[in-house]
Image (cartoon, rainbow, N blue to C red):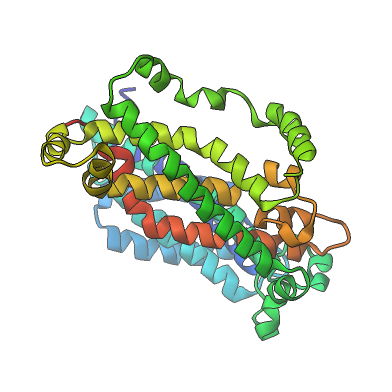
Length: 404
């Protein structure tokens, strides 16, 4: 540990690891963007990583080190010491872009990681600061890759032509020369596969699920949070017990009952079963928020002659707007993304929800780009809704955690 806490050793080790992280990141990014062959160079990463870390420790001039390092990467581009190795068909401008990107995104973050480091023995604080900064940068890259790569592959595949997919299924670059024909899969989904109807069905089913859920969960959560009745504590603790039973266990009984009652293959059937899955979590979220509201305000309303329902409508609900928005958004996402019940209960294409319609595209007779386009159509609206209302959701989820 004492050896690692030497400034030069710390810089060399962190530089070595960061060089491999950046080489892999640049290689993967450019491979996806161009469809060409890039891969990290192990020997180049080893040498340049150690050299970059030592240079930042002993020279303490990030701009000079970055300029020299980028120039060095360009010089070594055609040697075994290149940090990025290229396939035979990679044009020279892509090669230059790769090594320059590696040089910039290697030195710039590494300088931030080693900002507290210096030649000689490091204090425990300086050593831990460098390690934590490295782990933070590594975590950001891994998290971003896990989130963006599947979405990028989905979008790029949806923009491909059938010939391009057959020629190279792993080429995820975009063919700008196709112009508006890039969006052919989307136009065919709405023109030939009735996806406009699926979008509308999912939308109004999700909205009605939100309204039904709030209709039952608001008075239920208020009763648990404010009223005193026998079994209140047991009810409060058992609200989420329904989630201990996997939905797949309930699938067969639900299918049998809905078939016998004529509710299978109907939208009212979905509107009966969806709230069953969302009301418990809405009750759980709202009761915690209601407990955090000052009871004196509601008592003042009761003393002014308001009934309990009027107190809820005129006082509690306006004060609970952040929680109501967060619960509504959460319930909407559950209903929008629900697949198992829709797949099990709906057979008529005219009544399909969006998830059921996307599942229909998973067929050997339908081109893969249509399936990916359907997945994009299902993802974009709920993503935009979440990003637009995320601040309300965060506020609503945390507001009831502290009373007062």
